[in-house]
Every structure is written in C-alpha cells, then in structure tokens.
Length: 258
Length: 249
Image (cartoon, rainbow over all chains, first blue to last red; front, side):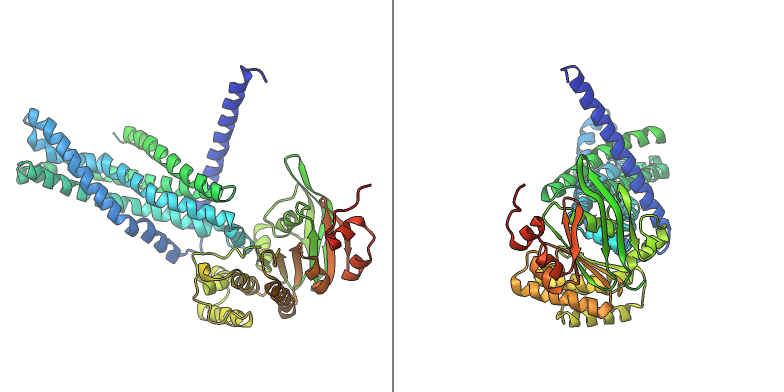
C-alpha cells in the first residue's frame, strides 16, 4: 500500500468500526428496552440497581453539589458586584444549577462511580463465562443484567440531580451570606425569576444522561474481549465514551430546549 | 425431553482463515457417558459451544433427538436449553450470589417452582454432593473443588436430559479428579441423562466412558469404546494414549 492510501484506509477502517459499534449499541439498547417492558418483570433486581445507582451515589452527589454551588457563587459575586447586581446572584446560581451544573456534574460523577463499575462487572462476567452460563440456562442475559441497570439509571439520575440542585443552591446561599449578601433578596429573587421549566429541563437531561451512562457501561462490558486487560479496557472505554457522549448530548439538548 | 441422542451433521466453523471444524460428524449416544477428547486446538471447545448454542455454525446441523437446534424457534430453543445442564471449566458461578442462590438460579429465573421448594431441592442436591452447610457461603470463599460441586448442583437442578462437562478435572489434584469422575457417573445415574464430557483426561475417558470420540484437526478421527482405543493402531490415537508426539510420515 502506498503512503497516500494508508491514511485513507485507516480512516475507512475507523469509520467502519464506529458504524459497527453504533449499530451494535443501538441493537443492544433496543433489546434492553424491549425486554424491560416484557413480562416477567423483576422488581427486586431493579430495586437493587436503584440502590446501587441512587442511594450509594448520594454522598458523592451531595458533596459535588454543595461545592459546585459554593464555588460558582464565589465567582459570580465577584463579577456581579462590579455591576451592582448582587440581587441576581441567587437566581443565577439556581438557574445554573438546575439547567446545567446539576445534571451534568451529577452525570459525570455517577459515570465515574457507576458506569465504570457496571462495565467492569459485566466484563468480568463475560471473561469468566457467567454470561455464557446465563445463555445456556435459557436466561436472557440482556433482560437479567442490562435492562434493570438502564431502568435504574433513567429513574435515579433525575432524583440525584434534584438533590444536587437543592444542595448546590444551599451551598451558594451560605457562601453568599458569608460575603454579606442579603438573605431575603437571595431567596426572593430565586422565587421571582427561576421557573419550573428550568428544573424540569434539567431533570429531563438527567434521565437521558442516566440512560447514556448505564447503557454505554453495560455495552462496553458485555462485548469485552480478552482477559484482565479486556476488563480494564472496557472500563476505560465506558468512562471516556460516556463523558464525551454526555457533554455532546448536553449541548444538543440545551440547543433544542431553548 | 429425556436423554436424547445428539447427532452432529456436517458441522463447519471457521474463524477468519482458520478452519476449526471441518465437516464434523459425531453421535453422542442417549443415556451414555460420551467423552470427546483431543489435543488443544483440535476443536473440542468450539464443538461444545455449538452443542450448547453459544456459537452458530457456518454450516451443519445439531440434532437433539428429532429436533434440530439451529432451526428451532425461539420458544423451542429455550425449551431445549432448559433441558441442558453445562458444567463450565471454571464453574462460571455468579459471584454476586451465594452458593445456594447459584443452585436455585435456574428454578428462580424460570419460576419452575415456589421458592421454599426450590431451596429444599438445592439443599438436598448440595447435601448429596457433600456440600452440606454451604448454601449461604459466598462463591469467593469456596475452593476450586467446592465451586465445581456447586456448579454441578446448578447443572443438575433442572433435572436435565443432557449434561455437558467442559474440562471437569482440569486444574484439580488427582484425588479431586477422581471425585469429579465419580460425580459424573453419579449425575448420569441420578438423571439418566445423555452425558458429554470434553476433556484432555485420557485416564478418565478410559475408565468411566461408554464411548470416546477423538477429535483431530476439526474432524472425528475415531469413535469407539475404551477397548477400541486401546487396540487402535492409529498413530494419533497411540500418541494421545502415550503422550508422545505422533511419528511423521
């Protein structure tokens, strides 16, 4: 192959590879959706995953929310005071948390904790033939393993985001008070300016991010190849792809929602 | 489905340019212990994956009695799978479940019986396999031999008509290997199932099999009893029995 053809061939291979993975991911997601609406339903498996995705992520989400709200408030107080716009600090923090920072940072934190763990668990099951064992026992692996995880992601991310939004605003409030802002003005202006759509849009984003981080994690683990190295690769791919997809998805959804 | 004969007809499978199974024909006798032996890379594991539907052949057929596996509909395939038990080489136990939960998993998943009865059956199976008291043990706390026995209990719990064993004695000490051989015979006695054992263990094949099939380069080179193998003049068979390299032409 000549020097000119080599990069073209590499580009072609990369495109084919991407299309192949996208197609397989779409099929797996569709199967997971299909199996989740088909009986028999297994509420216990879903609740177990909800506990793992939601309850167990609570502490990290609260910490992220508080400090994000706090640091954001610190930054904008500095800027807004130049224009005597102190009264706008509260609504700006609340809008930023509910529309953007809450859903995105929650999704990124949960991806690090849950998406990577799902990918590693699934990949370990793959390399130790546990997924083959399910197939041989006529137990559909996608229904048993993937559907409950995706359902848990879709339902728990909005709840976690709501918590992050709330503690973020509270964090911002305490920082604002420490900087001498008026308490009534901070809260009152939030009530005047922030509307339910701000909160609702953020929660819709969070549900989509929940789907992305669980489905990408499960996909990369489910189709993992090789031994221990494969498990490591699956985990890395799950985190990197989820992060990028969440950020790109966030941009697209924000553009569509405004 | 009780103990069907399993016939494989013209099975071909390639991975890229590597032809692993080449028009393979084999019959696993109903209700007997059939050993499938051969050197590493001879296609034994690939054959087993086709027998259990984990791989789809390029061409060829796998018949369970009068039903062809790969042409069967989804429901029929599911029913065929429910009648098959497979012991994986490393057990493939679910490490998120306890030993007992692993055993009752197929009953729980298929809602084959109420939970208390399923637990009763699992306890009885574990007791029969010398694993009394292991019901609540975590899988990671079990030794290699104990994992094998729990995996055998899981394979037996649905009372299958067909039992597959993938390298059941690999990595076990001689005493445990003898115990596993005894368990294979016991499982056959208990269920009356058609048993197929994929193994390198020629000693076990000669002592407990009803029929042995030697796979060589993707084909069955010889099928017969232990006696047929001992008196065979085929260099590949002799080499396998003695552990020496076959002589060149």
